[in-house]
Structures are given as C-alpha cells and as structure tokens.
Amino acid sequence: MPRLTVAIIGGNEDGYSIYRMLKAVGDVEILGVADPDPSSPGVKAAAADGVFTTADYTEIVRLPGVDVLIEATGEPEIQMYLHQIKPRKTSIMEARALDLMLAVLREKEKLLEARRVQGELAAILDSVQEAIEVADSRGVIKYVNPAFTRITGISEKERIGQNIFEASPDGALATVLRTGRSVVGHRTRVGGSNAEVISNAAPIIVDGKMEGAVVVFQHFTDVMNLMEQLRQSTSIIENLSDKFGQVTTSKYTFADILGNSAELRRCIQVAERAARTNSTVLLLGESGTGKELFAHAIHHASPRRDKPFIKVNCAAIPDSLLESEFFGYAKGAFTGAVKSKIGKFELAHGGTIFLDEIGDMNLNLQGKLLRVLQEMEFERVGGTQTIKVDVRVIAATNRNLRELIRQGRFREDLYYRLNVVEITIPPLRVRKEDLPILINNLIIKLNRKLGKKVKGLSKDAEEILYSYDWPGNVRELENVFERVMVTVDEEVFTKKHFIQHVSQFKASPERDIELIPIDQMEQLLIRKAIAKFGTSVEGKRRAAQALNISLATLYNKLKKSRTEDFTN
Image 1 (cartoon, rainbow, N blue to C red):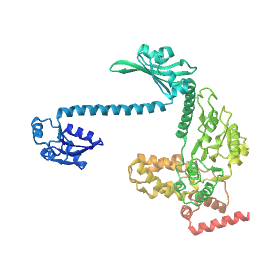
Image 2: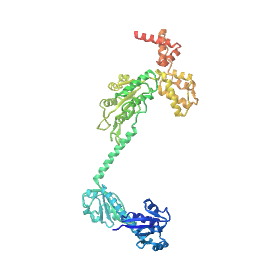
Image 3: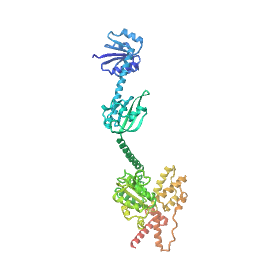
C-alpha cells in the first residue's frame, strides 16, 4: 500500500489531536502544519518533531505531493478558498469529517486502553494466592482464577458457565447475589469440593445497579496457619520492643574520670588493662566514689563496646523480683505473666552487665548467679529452656564483702568468682589534690546547665573545701556545688557560700587522746595531715603549711616514720 501524505491546516486542539493520532500511523506521512498562532499546540508539536510549520496556510497547499489536506479550523471561508486553490489530485477533509474521524480514533483508543487494563487485571488476578470467583446478576459464573482450582480442585472449564445458586447455594457469592449486601468471614465448604474456606464477597455495582458479585476466599487451614504465624510474629515483636526499650550502651569513658592523684591513676591503669580482657571485675569503694563511672569506662574501652551495657541495681529491686529481673520469666510463670519477659542477662548477651550494690543480694540468688558466671547459661523463671549467653560481668559494692562472708551473708565461692580483677577506688578525702580539676569541671558543667557565669572560688572558699573530708565523696561534691550555684548569683564563691552546706556533715570531734610521747603525737598529726591533703607534692605542701613546718622537714619526718615502721 502506497504511503499517504497529509498536511494539517489549524494547530488548535482538534488539529493537535489529529496530528498525534496520524503520527502514530505507520503508512501516513505528515508534510506540514499551518496556523497563524505559532504557540498553538499543533504547531509546537510539529516544530519539535522537525515537521514543516507556517503561519500562511496557502504555503501548505503549495507543498508538493500532498494527498490529503485536513482542515481543522472549522472556518467556512477557509474551506471555500481551499477548494479553489488546491491541486486537482489533493483531497480535502473538512471539520465535520474530521470530527467523525476523531470520534472513531478516540473510541479506538478507549478500546485499546480497556484491553490493556483487562490484560493487566487478568495478570493480577491470576497471580493472587487467594481464590477469586465472579458471577453475573443471574448467578452465572463468569470467571475463576488459578488459585480457585488449586484450593478447590475444580478446573476453570468445569466451573465457568455453571450457576452459583446450583453449584454453591450456601456460599458467600450466592448470599451476596440474593441480598445485595457484602459478606465477611463466611466459613463454608465450596460446592462440588471438600475444601473448607473462609470467604469475603461483595456486589459489583455499575451505575447504581448490581451487575454481579465477586468472592475471595482462602482455605481454612491456611487462615489458621496465618493466624499462628501472626501470633508468633506479634510475640517476637513484643519481645524485641521490650529489648530495645531496655538496652543501653555506655555513656562514659576513661577521659570522663577526672583526677591526677597517684591512687586514682593506678586504678585507671588497672581498669584499662582489665577492659581489654573478658575477666570479671569487682569495683570496691565508698558511696559516691565513681564505681559506675568506672564500669561504663571499662565497657567502652573493651571489644564489647558496640554491644549492650546493662545495669542492675541489686539494692533497688525487691528480693522477690530480682530473679525474674536477672533471668526473665516464661508466659504463665505466675499470675499476671501474660507474656514472656527477657531478663537482664539475656539483654546483655554479647555485651556487659553491671551488677551494682552486689553486696545486697540475697544468698539464694547468689547461688544462681554463681551458676551463670560458671556455665553462662540459665532458665527463665517458670521456663524449661536453657538459655546460653556470652556476658562480661562487672560488679560493684560499697560493703565489706569479707566481713559479710564472715557473717554468713555472702557466699565465699561467689566472692572469688567475682574478684578476678579487684579495683578499690580511693575516697575523695585521700586524693584532695584532685579537687581543683573536679571543681573546675563542675563549674563549667553547671554554668552550662543552669545558665550561670561563675568564674571560680576565693581562697577562703578553697580552704574550707580542702579542710572538709567529703564523706559522700564526688557525689556529695557535685550536690553541694549545684545547691550553691542554684541559690547564689555571684561570679566568685566565698567561704560563706559553702560553710552552711559542708559544716552540717562534718565528722564528730576526735575522741580525747590519752597522753602519749611527743614523737608519737607528732607522727599521728603528720599521718592525719597526709590523709587529709593527699600524698602528691601539692598535698604534702598543704600538709606542711597546716602543721606549720617546712616541706623539707615534713619529708624528713615521713622518711623517719617509714624507717621506724620497717625496724619495728
């Protein structure tokens, strides 16, 4: 078939529509488009495709070899003039004929689109795992998908054309056709099959009239399996939610442990070496010395730093709950246990568990803890499954564990299991040379927290802080400073700001000392001064000032004291 050449006069919407449609036809060549408006959609589209365009339609008529002139303007004058000037072999398609052609082409487009949608819908329905069955308003079955045959064993050929009122009169599809209302969760057997199914069905409404109905169903066993999977998934999600809500990591590093005293630096060195191993660490020290800070730092410096760091305060949890807190419990283990709960040891798997105030744990739980430390396995309360864990243990206490062992309140075997690496953190009263760095850090931190502009302390304020023994250690120091900074607006704190806060905690006066030789009294005062100000150079300088002797004299007397202790 010879190729047909056309030219279009009019770049309006009709002209643009015919341009798009003819462009898609393989046997048609568009030679040009004319319109006095260069911004008309037909002209712009033709120009973009490299097709000749012009504002003078007579130029289109003079194009050589045009078989058909398409007049899309609808203007009678233009139509009459075209008939006068067109070549004899050129035909003209006027606006009315063009409208008919456009209507036909549009219907064709709709038909093609409908076929495309039908094909996509068929592909979707064929791939669905649930069975689908469709019937018209009279009950004649028009469609079943492959899943229908898989679930019921009835082939498409056997089913299509049957009437649903005869094939499955009690099913959801027949019910919808009788009542016109949707059906949800209908349990029945498919007619002609032994398959027990759960069905959902709905009417097909077109222009307000029910033209049929569709049913979707699954095998009852599949539904039960899905419900069980959902139950299991829900349980897993709940456990994970509990776990995510409780799992934490370390907040502090060794850089957060402030102080340069020899006693503290020795503790840090031991802790840093211990952090590189998986050995159990026992942290000893008075309340407020920073045992938890050390535990965080050890975990952070260990190969387990990216794993959980779980803290358990053994003194804060009642004995009756401590076991379930440690090891979790199984569903139904006791009244109110409506679901299983993960314990702290399980949460800490792969990481570190910090057992604070270990000296307050009851003997029964001490035995169970010993087993975990030895075997790294346990059972949840009320459970039978043995759970294995990989956990590094750090324990801490301010109690004298050896004394508790003598009293029968702490297991000796557990003590030796915990006491692989022992670190005794010194109290603040024996490392007062660390006070300047601690105080400076507190001022910076509390200035930021409270919006203050404190610059420092006066000499008399420093003296009162140095002379106080801080029985609550660093925690008490932090509390006192925050209390003062909250209530005082000055930029430099003096003695009057602290005297009321530290004097109330001062220890009771020393008991009367029996008469003893002067040299022994001298040694007693020297030891007391060293205990108060510390063993650093700065501490000894302060001790010498307090005793009203020179630093050299103090060194000589200390040397003499050590010699006498050795010879005695």
